[in-house]
Length: 399
Image 1 (cartoon, rainbow, N blue to C red):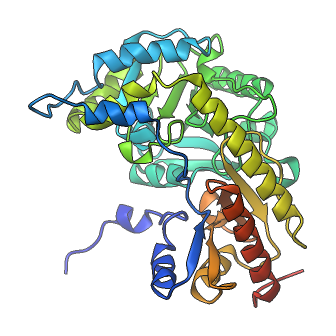
Image 2 (spheres, rainbow, N blue to C red):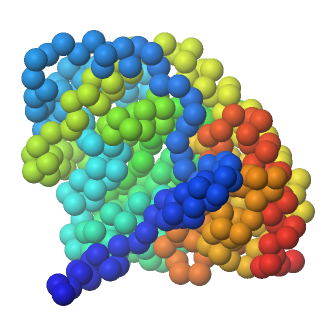
């Protein structure tokens, strides 16, 4: 029998999706599952976007430019101008989801054996894409007790080596919901310039900020023109996850011309997804205003509900639509599986993502889970109650 590659063996399973077989079995047994494990919003995709696809009248579904449709990229420069970011359309490359932007960015800027510093908890796919490229993730651990704020600059300085090529953040953060302040980003700018590093910023949750907080893009920081690389996506912004349209954005021409070669190898991003994404730029601001108001209510219900459960602690996030909560359990992987395989309350249970998969440091996250507040409020309340009931009888409860 042929042998599987070492890279394939090392590739981590998704903490978000690996428990799907247990969820499917529970559903087959008649159990209703509240899916808080994955960032799949229940918000409707804007009608103007759906209509743009419905009205497609070309006789051939052609390849686009490998960097994406020029009309879309030119229109996107106007979107970024709203955030005070001046770009040329050639600074933007349309990708097959934000995931491909991460992959192309890493492959363009780091070689096998190079190192990227990432604050953890981190988006699980950063581990996966780094593994695919034989790139070493060097984690800097943020603490739940400090609401997952950026660790001190000294922690970054300690781990920088000659193989360090980049720092990668997600802002607002997935999985914690933490929103990095401008001061924290200035700290990262100082490190990037001092050590001549790329500064990657995954900003796909840019619009989702709460309590009057405003996001700062690394593209708006002067002096980082050759260092800043942004990953973007329409998936969450317009509740269009299945469109698989993202973007890689940088003023560094060499980075963009290199990424384009990877783009040419995969030919072009999806045609219908690009039509959807371009139409999204015509969505009225009122759409996002309503969506953010809804998410603010959901966040408050979830965080307050979690903290009302004995032994549970959950910080209040300022962005995205996720929380990481600490539970009184022995092992989050075991607990999340148990909730699907062995437990239900009145025929219902909750699917969560064990936080172990959001750390690069082995052994961390064993008493933490990530929850996405992507369900309407009544469902969230029922999910919180299911979790509360489950924690009362879980055999591995501690504390």
